[in-house]
Image (cartoon, rainbow, N blue to C red):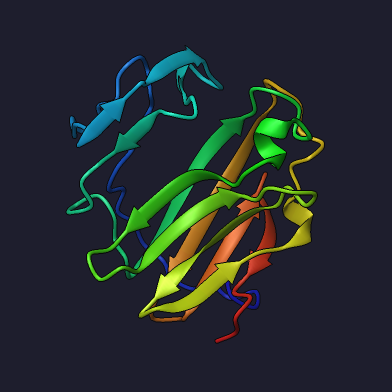
Length: 175
């Protein structure tokens, strides 16, 4: 929806779906390019990935990520309270894609006092973000599940961040 009007209709292609049911394979059998120190724990439904600071899970972009338009969504549960030093001492990247030209997109939880979860990246070397104070995760408690969604449209020059179904930020750098 844009200004109360549907921005599009019809089926949206689902390129990569990861249930994490004790396996890094996608629902269509796509294997990760890298799975290092990957662990599992009880999740929102079934099992969930459990990432330590050294864990890495990467997938090939080809056929799995549309840079023109798309959405990345996930359920996230913290290991410790949101004010714990593991979240305040450094940024925590929840999702990231780096293009061969150096551009990138990401969902990040910021360090320091704010604890904001935002979406951002660079397009042709220019910074773009969806960053808003209402996505503060400092009051989140361990084991509580929170839904995050980052959506973008290159043709509309727009990126948006949703936290628990609520729009928390929309294209900070303008259009």
